[in-house]
Length: 270
Image (cartoon, rainbow, N blue to C red):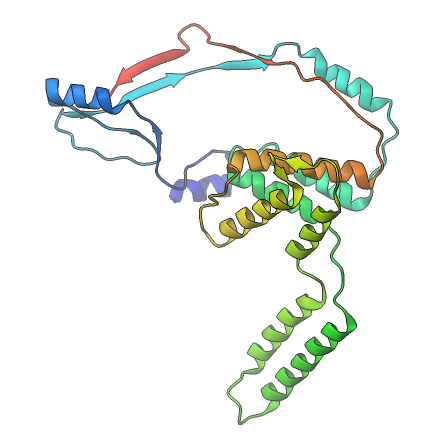
């Protein structure tokens, strides 16, 4: 907690775990063999905090490494700039804001933070329709009744409560974002699927994940959050491209080259 506070105050850019999760473990066969032959207990490595007895009989295998990942052919970046430079590109205000937010999402190391940032970018691009006149009339009637109840000294409803409730009702003059997003998903014919599911189902998974995170629940969805976050970023880019009628842009991304520097991998017993 204190380290997270310091990270937020100073902007250190640290990736600090918010829960304890198993990050590495050996097989049960190895654990059983060491337990039976040496009386030693292998403890799983934890991303977070881990405490085990200092009796010399509990230990963990710690694997550390330094991988160097680089594009096998970095010239594709220059090729991308060259192609984009020749295109006539103009974005509306909503698209510019969404693109700026989306760039922030690419810097996030946490799948949860990257997803929420991409979701925020999506909100910039989805138009919410106003409620019907009949629905607005009902809302106005309820607000009027709240005002009358707050003015009635014999009624327990406090004026500040009435004002707060009226503010909530005011936000209902437009359809909810989830309704607007679902409506948009039904209008998209191509691509037919994202992450192997139809567009409406993909967007429903995004809404479900966002709501679970907002209510402090782990977003366990059929589509892993990392994959969902990546696909959502691509979906937002698709909307930017479509609404601004940008010309077609294709770029082949070469595979990454992965290498271990000298002494880059080690296994220790702790």
